Length: 227
Image (cartoon, rainbow, N blue to C red):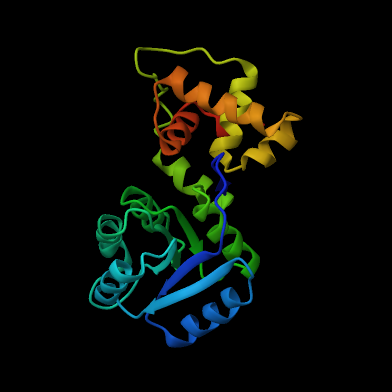
């Protein structure tokens, strides 16, 4: 599940790998090192080392394992964001339990990738979060978010009920499902700029401020149940 921001960064993506398994770190370093736009700038074996190295390296993207010695990934993540606010944190884990995903998003992760994911998915996730987006696998996200929704509740935006046009509902649904701006534009036969405009309009109209709030609203409105 990917959501990209309108802005595009330039230059190589400086990535730090945090995992307590040396073999996995070596494999990731080899995989990422083969990409012309990605540079591995450091590694860490546990949560305490993560904090020390992040302060020095200030990576663009941190691949952070959930389960590590001394300080677990979910425990260290908020401290990473304090130490290096510009670093985007991508959780890399073997846990498919939606509880871990929910907590990771709550404490500030920009994405969540399973260790069994294909190399292409991991590379896509790194590039997505680097450019300011959020990465979640669509099916994983759907299961998690559907659990969080009280289906008997129907949302109210700030200031009361808000009516959305059919096109606004379509754009909002695709955002919640994780489509990139380009993918949504292709699906709806619109330009990327038009999709970006719809997204900004939706946030203003609903009185929401983050992508997570848009997703929550879409789920509570039952948009993911629409075909």
